[in-house]
Length: 384
Ligand SMILES: Cc1ncc(COP(=O)(O)O)c(C=O)c1O
Image 1 (cartoon, rainbow, N blue to C red):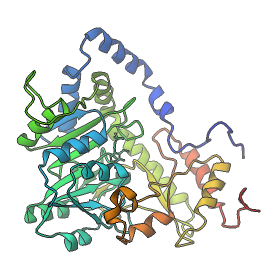
Image 2: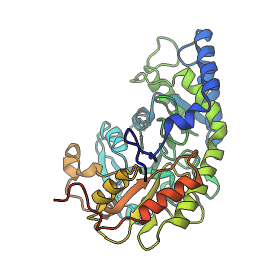
Image 3: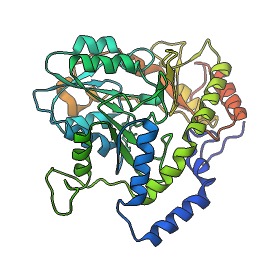
Image 4: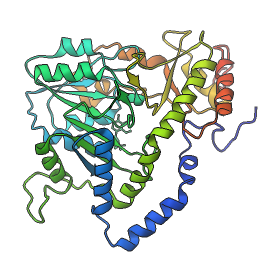
């Protein structure tokens, strides 16, 4: 087995490879952008916002600087107070928790199922008359039963924000993820299914009041020049990025289909005695596979994960864990550190394997052979 020393033969994601084939289009967009003389907001951003709103099936979309700002702006718009309770999915990437922490409500972590999605039964147990908001995070491109969750929120008069940073193109019962909540937030960080060449983000909503408020917040509190009637920030989607995203949006569904085919190959070829793919088995879920997450079955605590990662790295396969740490165990959330949830076990034996739409079936076959040949008896470099 030849190992490329300067990088992985099979990286988790090859950003250059997936973007280089569009280099001529991107170069012409950049030239047009410079020649236009319009460097902030304008036509390109509006066109992308309209296209994205239509794709998600929401009335409004606002292009912002990144997914973190999308969440911060969304949470600011909801007028929460420090007495309000907010239920937040426990295994989220830390960003979601930081964004809500800035508003300073009472945060309650909600557990997940063994498929890595929010546990709606745990939500039901944790709702009180102080619950104002539920934040669901569609990690890896997967989702929970969004009809049940949005109906529950409507019935209890609780706001719902969807963190769709990892789930562009995911559907539940044929409806796009991001169309269920009061607000949905997107990231166009380069590694995402709809990834920019740099940072980018968007916020979608059907509510006109929230749309106007969030549009002001992204632009220093203003939609009319020099009238600043919201406490705003500066987080505007770049016009050249907007043009690239509009163009890439046309390829999104096709790219997802290719990823789904590769995941089927993984499912077929990985040794079922050793590995199990982690995803929601509900047939109404259309997973967009931002990440392909698997679980090593042989060892419930997975004491061998470090060894497996080293073995894969030495054989040219990049492996990462999404995510090794939980927000409510972070010192910034010291009031939550004593929570004990199933998700602590969940994160112990999961890891992500290479997946991007330009990966070939032959590559997947080779990666599976490497993974299937792993045994806990692999001699690690760290072994004495
Ligand atoms: C679940 C989740 N939320 C929010 C974000 C923040 O997005 P950004 O990196 O564009 O700020 C990310 C980015 O990785 C994410 O994965």
